[in-house]
Amino acid sequence: MGSARSEGGPERDQDPAGALGWDEGLYEGRDAAVETGRAKVPGQRGAGDAGGADGEGETEPEDPDEQPDRDSGTPVGVPEQPGPPAGESGPGRRRPEAGGERDAPEDAPEEAPDEAPGDASGEAPEEADAEAAAKPRKPKRRKRRILAWTAAGLALTLVAAGTAGWFYYQHLNDNLDRKPLHIGKSRAPEPTPNAAGQTPLNILLIGSDARDSEENQRLGGARETFGGPALADVQMLLHLSADRSHMSVISMPRDTLLKIPECTDPESGKVYPATVGTRMTNQTLMRGGPGCTVATWEELTGIRIDHFMMVDFAGVVSMADAIGGVPVCVDANLHSRTSDGKGSGLKLKKGTTEIKGEDALAWLRTRYGFGDGSDIARAKAQHMYMNSLVRKLRENTGLSSPNKLRNLAEEATEALTVDEELASVAELYALAEELKKVAPNRTTMATMPWIWSPSDHNRVEPKPDDAEQLFRLVREDIALDGRDGDGPSPSPSEDETSEDPADDPADIAVLVRNGTGSPAAAPVSGRASDLVKLLTEAGFTRATADQNQVENREETAILYPSAELEGDAQSVAEALGMPLGTVRKSAEVSGVTLEIGADWTEGDTFPKPKKGDNEPPDSAEALNGSDDTACMEVDPAFTW
Image (cartoon, rainbow, N blue to C red; front, side, top):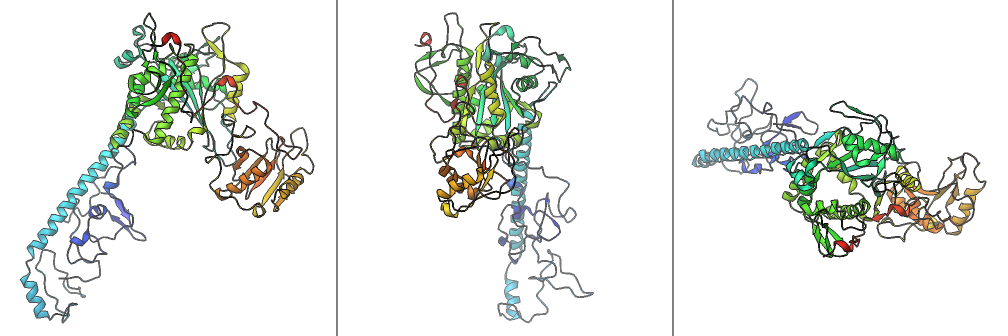
């Protein structure tokens, strides 16, 4: 059994009965503060506290070699028979004297005390002896043994359950398939941490069209490609902001033509040279695996990718079934089937329908029937599905029972191929916890801006300016919903404004710093004093200008060090007409601090943002994650 250490004392063997919460008062003639002859460990956990069958809470298996009292004759897992702590007397015991006899063994007949003339009850010794002689002793000891064996059985059962939980956790880990993250020659630069030392998290989601099993063949069709190399049918870059306040998802159409960098297959060692011309982006998967898809994304976007997750047809179906259905919407009756038998076969009625299993896979693969029938329309349908899926998982709809959660864990781990650093249930759980921090209305789905390729009118290429603008926003960790930096701020809502109430403006100390300089120009003289005057007129009489030289800032921001000052910082922003997106938590300040940037070098009115500077281009077709009214447009040729 494992051991626990009592506070300030030596290491002691863990008591199974105590760990089970067994009432030790059932032992008669025992001090309640003493448990099985050992010290009680505060907060001690037993085998029953191990993670359950769903794998949450990793538990080490019990070591069979660490068994207490191996030579005492006490069965393994059975608590010691109760006795007084060392150095104390107890009923039926004699305090040993120098050179005297030891206490009698527990199985020996109990002797009457030979020192005290009476006991605490006030009875005479003769009366006490007579009463003691009248009481049968064997039933008491038999009761003790029954309780001990009962505790042993419970302890062993829970140890077995804990061990089973540990093995199940390992089983889930073993379900995951592992591949190297990046198999190209060079990496994109790592992002610069923000003021609080945080960095963004970028995850590439890949949908494989592998037909490497009978199930994948049945679901994917195209029998002539059975056993052939898999292609990256779906590619989405998920960007989680450094402060975990927002999330952006960018889809790349499957038919995008790109230059693919050199990749080395990690299993065979085969080197795939960089392509001279462009190739369809879905071919990256057949050039050494998902690590080549990651390398291609990094070269195109300049965005450092931290992890990837890949799933095949059968995986989508099994996970959709485990989740229990995702709501989707079409604006007319839909049947995705052409006269010559092409299409996903998806058939839905007008309005909202919860889909799962093969219908979910069909929705994600449908082109014929959505919009213009292109891969771009399919990407929009995938965004709608992802938004609905995220909302459902956040609400835990349909996942209230342990069995459903366990099924989801089983199906998800069997379906996923992940990079080596993400290949454990613990890492996936930690990632899920990070993703849960983002509210649906701070999640934005976008499609990489594209143009029809001049070399192949059935394919697309990244739209030069618009695509780079979208990638830049992600590289610079700017939210695609326009609520960061100089982007337009929507009307304040409950999720934007701080729960911390602001003090009276006269009680808020504000330090104003002049960071209006640039590499080509010195700071604007007296700018901090100008803003102090403006704040004073607004009632912030404790505003002062920082007389020290400060770093140049491109953008004006209001910083605060801790949650209790967030409301005060937002109050300053409101007084100056600044968007709430300019209010940020920072470990570099000790109080509410207004840092004036090069974007506000003159005037009393905070400048309006330049349209489009920090917004995704219209061609990205951004969709907000909280939009549950979105409906796919159905091609009239595919209605019924």
